[in-house]
Amino acid sequence: MRPRPIPVSLLILLGFLAACSLPRGAALQSEILATSDVSDGELAVYTVDKSLLPVIAKWPRTGFEYSDGWISRQRGPTNAVIATGDLVQISIWDNDENSLLTIPTQKSVNLNEMVVSPDGTIFIPYIDRVFISGMTQDAARETIQSELEKIIVSAQVQVKLISGRRNSVDLVGGVAAAGSFPLPDRNFSVLNLISLGGGISSGLRNPQIKLVRGSKVYTNSVERLYSHPNLDTTLRGGDKVIVSEDNRYFLSLGAAGTEDLMYFTKDSISALDAMSIIGGLSDTRANPQAILILRQYPAKAVRTDGKGPSNTRAVFNIDLTSADGLFSAKEFAINPGDLVLVTESVLPSLSGILTLFNTSTIISDRFN
Image (cartoon, rainbow, N blue to C red; front, side, top):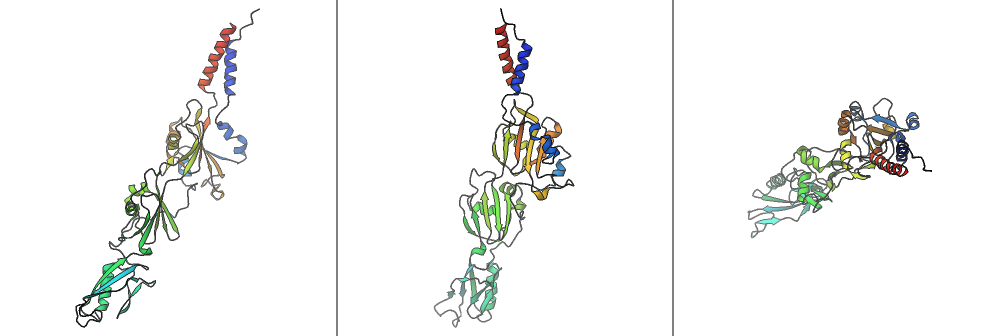
């Protein structure tokens, strides 16, 4: 007796159910946003749309290093300015036969290199100490000569400046030739210094600038300095400029083209940029209506008046199947340390269903 054939519809149903139980590489939206977590206040869940963008723009940023901001460019004297700790070399010319400084066969005298003292002065024979700190070389020469002329009418003075630590800046890392460089004038800027150091090393990812001035640390990117000349800060003696690559990152998981730690490739990354960086969504697995951004806020950022998240754990849901969702994704900023999770579609993959359907058809044919 021939066995009764199994209905094709039953085989397809069994195949569909089998597909639903296949192992998955990503969570479902419903699994992440479990009712208990949301209702018990364990998560703050937000739908990203045009009404939410101006609200979260005022919330504290997360994942960024502390910075004292940045300093705009300010013009200074075109000549070098003498500072405490600099070395100055004084040459005095005098043609008087009865000169106090020279002998008859000598027309000039060179004083030993002198360090500008903490009170900004140097010692000159016969006129005592002369204040020159903060002056250009020309101004210092005129000041010293004016004092000398009171006792040596024919004296002519020449001043040579050798920059000390307070008139030099340090360039650290990220360039062809790091080192300490004297300030040629008071209009010497960050980009001037980088150029003097041989330029930024090739292959440096989105180069970042740190300017250390005293106890302050200012940060910016080279890209912004190139684009906005008014941000090319004028340097001061003692400044330290550190060039390094951008180490900010976000995490990519789920039904994405790439599951990995993804570095920022430019100053600001939007959710739509992030989709491109991770290689897009899996065509057969991803749920484009549920791109989740998981972000941890500090406890002090939590607010009940809408001026901050209602919980330290926030989840932002982006729907890439609507025009508003796409436009909003382009404006939604990814913060360093964010987790971008592409959730799995509720329906099994089409390819999986078709495979099971073909298998079911072959089995059915054998029984018929």
